[in-house]
Each structure stands twice: as structure tokens, then as C-alpha cells.
Image (cartoon, rainbow, N blue to C red):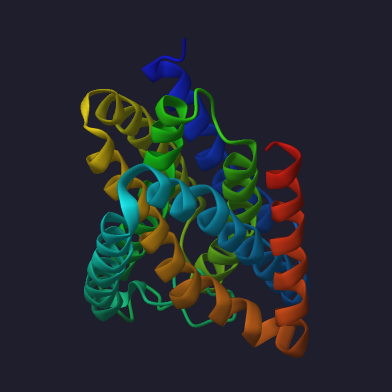
Length: 251
């Protein structure tokens, strides 16, 4: 029988991938084309996971209407929240090419970047906890998708943070705090799914799918395309197929 702390542990694992990416970026000079390629691969993996694990699960549990409402509703909410974060300097939080503003140039941008990163990480963590209830165990494809995509997210963001002159204390404080929040979000998702009716669980799952899809389009693909250029589509397709194969192997 799964427990809330098991859900929290899976959420922490997904959040730890952000810290791993941050560590790599801080101590190793990773070519931007390489980080962009990994970002594109991670985007493909996430697209597969949200299509075959999240959206399909939501549709089978709560029906088409609940799925559409959840996906579009939260995608719209994410877009609105992302617009606010972007206005205060968090728009380029996953960019590595010098687009991130320094704090002295845009006061409050450090906080905006941190809030934007939380906005990206919470939905996928919540659905990890939900999957322990609805699926009887964590989805291998989903946890792989989150981990694989979070490493380049952390890597690319921290390259940008270093270019903007932010300190190691700020960088690792942000990513460490986000990893803890991811753990708490996964535990909360588990507890919520345990008491919510199936229709509500379906909407929660669809909400996560909408948020992840919006995040991929708004923050991951632009960074990947800027550096990987014409190879972005091919690399994303490879990531999608790898995750699809994992999904079918576990079916």
C-alpha cells in the first residue's frame, strides 16, 4: 500500500533532477547546443507522458468534458500566471544565452524566476502523487519523463543565472527549495486523490497535463530551438518515441 511519504519521495526525486542539472551547470561548462538538445529530448518525453499517461488517464476516468475543461482551464491559468511572472523578470527562466536579467538591472527578477520555476514544477509533482492512488504505483514513464526533462531545465536555467551574476547561494537555495516543494506537492496530490471523487481526480490529472503542455511550449521549446535549430524537431521526436516505448513496455 502506497503512502503519502512514498509519494513525497518520488516528488523529491523529480525535484532532485533540477538540482543535478544545476550542479552540472555550475561546475562544468556544457556547450549550449548540447543543453538545448537535451532540452528538446526532454520536451518530447514530456509530451509523450502527458498524452499517454495523463490525458488518456483523465479521459478514461472522468470523460471528455472533464479532460477538456482541465487541460484548457489550467493551460489558460498557467499562461496568465506566466505572463505576470514574465512581467517581473521571470520570462527567460530556462534560457541560457544571456536573456535572464541581472538583479541590478531588473529588481525582483530573482524572485520572479524562482516563482516561475515553482509554477513549472508543481503540476507534474502533484500528478505523481495522484498516480500512486489511481494506478496503484508510480508511472515509470511519468517519473522518467519528469527526471529526464528536469535535468536540462536546471542546467539551462543555471547557465543563465550565472551569466546574470547570481550567487551560488541563491542558485542552489532556489533549486533546493523547489525540490522540497515538489516533494510536498506529490504528497499533497496523493492525499487529495485519496479522498476526491473520480471526476475530481480526472480533472486534477487533466490540469497537470495542461500545465505541462503550456510550460513545454512557453519555456522549453524556445530554448531548445534557439540553440539546436533545425535538429529540434527530430530530437523532440526521438524523446517522444523513447517515452512511448517505455509506456508500451509497462502496459
